[in-house]
Amino acid sequence: MNLNVRVSGSLRDFVTETISGGDYENVSEYVRALIRHDKERAEREAFEAMKLRLQDGFATPDSEYEHLSADDIRRRALARARR
Image 1 (tube, rainbow, N blue to C red):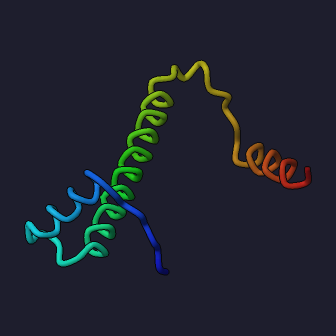
Image 2 (tube, rainbow, N blue to C red):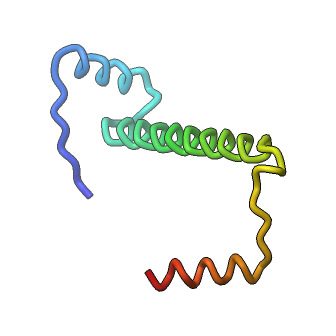
Image 3 (tube, rainbow, N blue to C red):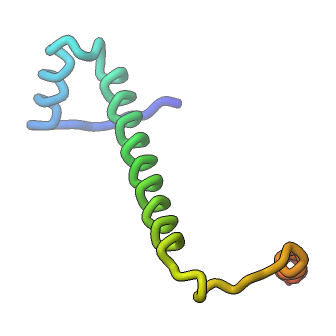
């Protein structure tokens, strides 16, 4: 996949300085690193959100749960699938 990105002014200067600093060989390598870091950030945020939902679930008193047998769960799943 090829992407074209226009960068001007202070952003262009920043990219040029970053690459000339030697951490990246070229603009493509720098952009790939930015995308990887952003993907990792999004995955961390999703994981943290999932942990919070799990913590809320585990903190819920047992009295608030509806106790279901495996057959109950199976029946509900089949009923949903038929909708």
